[in-house]
Image 1 (spheres, rainbow over the protein chains, first blue to last red):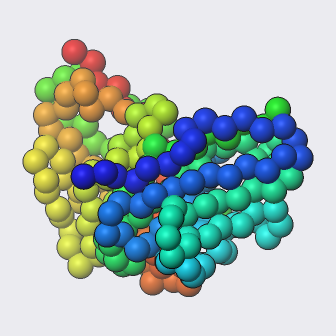
Image 2: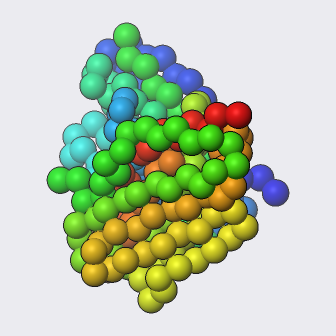
Image 3: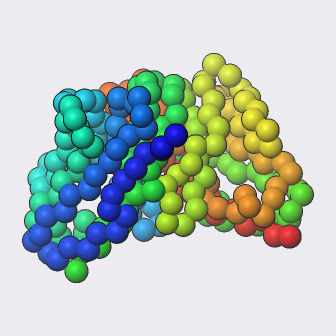
Length: 114
Length: 114
């Protein structure tokens, strides 16, 4: 049973480049969430998606960040024109239902901006 | 606005003894609470959860207690084992606009010594 798969595990980008982070949820899970963890902090909610729909992006910066969960393929978190402050660990989680069900997390993508 | 607080950044316990990790929350709309365990360079692993209709949930060596009037929950691990050494995150969600979004504390680093 594969859990949540994220790739790449580590990503290095220069300022101004684009970063693409991928997430394949647990098989059968249709709810995907993205979180960001800054050093010495807890995880912060960014966005919640279902297949082909963004349900809630209230935790995501208004500019440069976007997310999608297409009908086929993994969910993608895209950061355009990266800046140093985007350096963080980005975690994806999935669940089988939206309420009172634990979210299961991938091992994250560690994004470093040079 | 930190709605979930873990006031002890670290805790050291001897093997075989009980570990008690504490968590406080401020949002009375939270109705689902979870504990996650995290090793370095890995994603959070779900441990145990509790719904607000209960005050205790037990799973093997792990027990979570919820005191709604005090807005406090705790995780008890007994007996503690060296493999339990990790960072433990408390998380909560509820019937708010983003009811599915998990709100995380900053974590407590548990060290279980032989």
